[in-house]
Image (cartoon, rainbow over the protein chains, first blue to last red):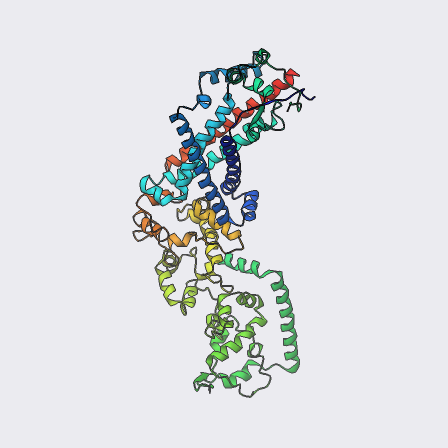
Length: 245
Length: 362
């Protein structure tokens, strides 16, 4: 089933696309080299470490990626601060009451307690959850990571026991992030029937008007007021794999 | 002691056993030949060699006693089992022509070779040792069989067990003195049968180079042979968690992974002896202990020169985190143990509900 005409609107800036790509690459490297160290007793982990040329090189790769991830986080933070100061920031990623309502409504919809689907703005509650999970988790990983990289310097300012605690936090928080990504992110961005086999908008920066209307109706109505009113009607669920694009 | 013997046996492998059988075969053949020729009885040898003061002059001008104390030989492990010519295989007639030797050492270095005719396993293990490597590099003072075991007066080398450190101490006297002051050495002198003597760690024949990196990285497993043995440690109220807690920590993880690597690691990682000491190990509660709290910072600083007062607390002292030891670490572990299944379970549940609703809609 091919749509008659697909037009696109811009969803992500060049900077956002680059940031996502960088996070994707660094997260993968950090997860592979980090989980291999966390579970070094397991055969698969030993295989990864040996494949990378030993534990010294595995640690080097992990630490270098950690530094780059830190630089990326600082760049992102500085950029957001700059946007706020210039008065050009929109609170589109800030969680609000509506997110809670949307989550409850969606849960009711899943459970067939309601036939109403939540209408989302620029980011839905799932996307906000992931973003803030990444910000919070990333901050924890960066702080504990530097404690482990520089334990002597850390112990100059902090009680010594915080270092073994940081080992546990770094390992478990990293595992949690990995599990969230392979379940929640992979499902929402790749496997969910609406986006299968993958939502490409974060790579191309473009989203079809059709999907925009369906997935972000509030943003669409606000930013594209010249468009026909039919947009307000929710589109029917497309069959699996028949996503118009 | 028994464990180290087993280890040695295991390492010599099947070839060793085959060669040993082969050697035994040759030995029997040789004996049979000797018997056929009419072997020389000990009494014939002792007619000359049993006279006190019987001696010869060596190439370097020194005198070599050729006297054999028949009673001493009879009380040795070989007494009543071996004839003189079983070892002195070059003697086929009595009297025999003199054998010229340049010096005393040349005598030992010639005659130790005959031990392998029977003790082939021990001999092949010796070939893997630092002693033999030293010898083959040209150091003629490196010990061979007779230097440790003796010649005509051979006794069981571990009767009493404290004899072992005395034997090694003949060359390694300084280390012997240090060892005898350690927790292990003092207990040995008191007759404790559990503590390790030299050969328990270093083996008797296949003595490895203790300065090699592979030796250093194997130390945790070496110490664990006793210190991870619950029955043995219970006697002394020593925790057997020492190995697991070490291996779970950064140093132990690094050592474990280095052991598997073929490349020489660029970094150094601490194993047991780097903190506790080698031959000078003391009880961890003793005032002089390198690892007692008062001395721990100094011990850390040997590898981490920038370490400050808080740093040693980063090591949990071989305790697994618990409410009593390291409650913070324990609490964090507990938290994530609940938090991770809660979050991931919740997300998977939402995914399943989402899919269920998609199926219902169709």
